[in-house]
Image (spheres, rainbow, N blue to C red):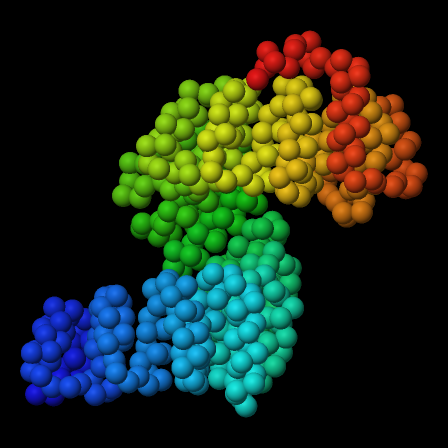
Length: 495
């Protein structure tokens, strides 16, 4: 019986039971399989989504070849088992097998998924040492790897070495730039690809629309929309979502709704983007109605939908609806997501329910800079400056770097005290960090100097910022020495 032939046919048909039956016959026949037959067994199990069985076969092989290793590594990488893929790749190299192009692509994909830049760079170095000419698949995988690891310069370097970049090469580089937050660079690369007569595909289209939405360049986004129609690009869910997101973020809700209805069954991300657009435009009722329609549709809200819809009830009196959403979030198990917790803290803080914000903060498994800023902002809204300063100090102590919103809070405290000298020191820190060009920080600076009666100081341009911890220590001492009582209430009455 030709076992390899039968295994190959069941691999093509995706029939795991029949393939397992052939495997059982092979075992009972007493025939000792060769490497060729073993490889077909591994392939059959991998293609029928039984990768653990494939690994059992692999481990029992008395002898392996390059195909055995590559099939297993590729399957691990393809199914998202990136750690296992890299472990297998290392074992292969230790056993003195030379990887081929397919092995490199799978290993780089695993590195990209895990964001392990050091391992990916080591693989790149090995490729350069061992290969005279890179395969286009490997080149594109390198661009993709560096992009996902936020290393745009390296991605550009690899791309510039490609003699004849194809559609995948250009799309990977555009995506890389946008993933690194360099949206204008991504748009420029996309423009160059268009001039090079590279066909626009749905993936590059969705990526570019996301970049246009991020920098609110609706005119460019509309041009991309025109390209998709002109060149017959497939209007898949990602493209539709990109259009909804673009028009919603640019305040064109009618156009966002029109794009939303261009498909019969919009993807959940399109629903979330449209809800977010309504929230951003202050149309809380419309956002709520959309959320209710979504909740009764065949789609169910996910963690990002909840984080978005909570924004509709910030700065409103709809506390009851917000608390109902909180209960639903707990019921569906989304409370463990950090950004959902951040949205809840922001909602309760701006609803003056600081006790609820503190409770959520304490129950969260992980905090990020947004978590801290939301809680600090909540205390600032209630004029609890002592507690806000304490939180800022705790945030620094725990190793978090203050961002522009953190510095805006410090400036607001300096303005309320008033404490112009500490405000000037903070201004110096802001200039060093190059935050001074930001609109949020600029507004806080003007407000701080105005409250301190020293608006002329904002124009002298001579600021030397100390370590921000010194500024916070100084503010703490001033609050303590002056017996500052915010809002006419004792701090302990508020928290």
